[in-house]
Length: 226
Image 1 (cartoon, rainbow, N blue to C red):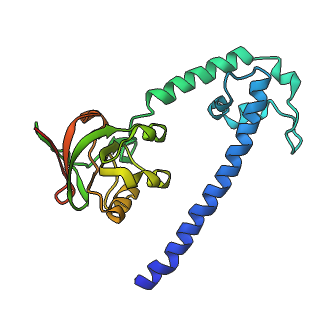
Image 2: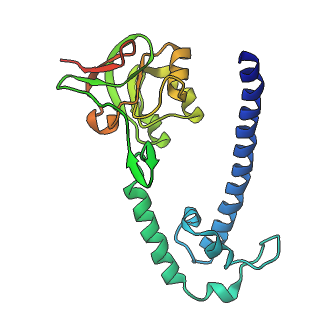
Image 3: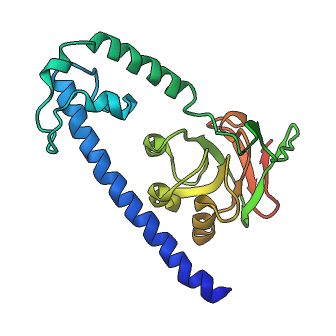
């Protein structure tokens, strides 16, 4: 079993590397297409290109592989209607941006088997990294807000990914809404010896920035400090 794991984990990591590599190239291409649409006044922001379906986007470009020139015949029609569609999609995206998707879907029914227990002073999650830490909470909704994090604060967020790794050197404790003992936040917390509690459903709304907490990574409990 160990030999199989060591062999095929390499394939898995390579697959993820090349997938990210391809997606990054596609993102650069889409951003350049968005820039051209923005310069023509078809969209209000370059990033609005990500709120277009592929068929909608490709109608603005000639069929040549280089996609260097916009199809002027298409750009003269339907711009206002398109902007309205983009605005509607953006509103929906930001409405659910901070919402977690269902953990499971079975026969079209959403459900979550997480057992959420808490009382007035304690909230229970999964013990992800051992140790305890007392400090001030810092709720971070997105990676853009990480600059607000101060040394030895308790980072509270939905989940982390490799892009967040650099900030762990200043984190005193970690609380995430998702993940288990093998999630990114849990693994990096153990490497940095940071107490961590994961799978605290609704943590970004239960706790507030500036609140004094105790993170118990041994038992998977977060206490409100008196």
